Length: 211
Image (cartoon, rainbow, N blue to C red; front, top):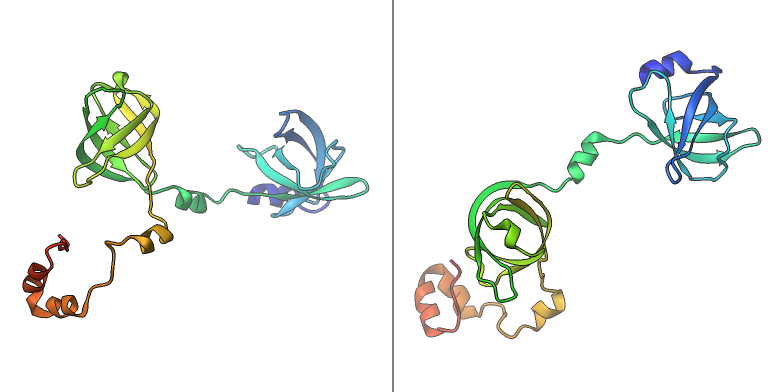
């Protein structure tokens, strides 16, 4: 953008193509007063404030997204909206490479099918399955270490791999506080943590020690 600014800044008038994202209509217009943050557009049919448009300027490989900020008597003032690649990458959910032997529960009376989870994130995972074509879109995953299967939806399939959106069921605060089996440790249990943990737990067999 620096080269464009250096070339056209000031009172230069240049021809631009203006794209309407809503209708995909494209028109020729004149851009002037180009700065690093925006420009003015003359001879345009757009007169809606805050409307998003695309600007095609000669010398730029990509279109510039803009927003109409002000409607003036003879032109419109446009602010450039540059995509921040760093911020965009941060918004992407981090996916971790894993290798987990799991099973898919298709439902409808069908037996579980083996699969291999290869990457995972909070919202979903990707797995490989030799019998992928036999699986419905709505499934449940039984993952080692979890006592309950996790529901999910297959959102894409390719070459034996499937992308799954996980339907995690998180407890609400009200549910958590109302659970009768959840309570703060007693004074005796706190004391047991200092050296007599096993003895204390033995007196209260209904408490399962953390692994």
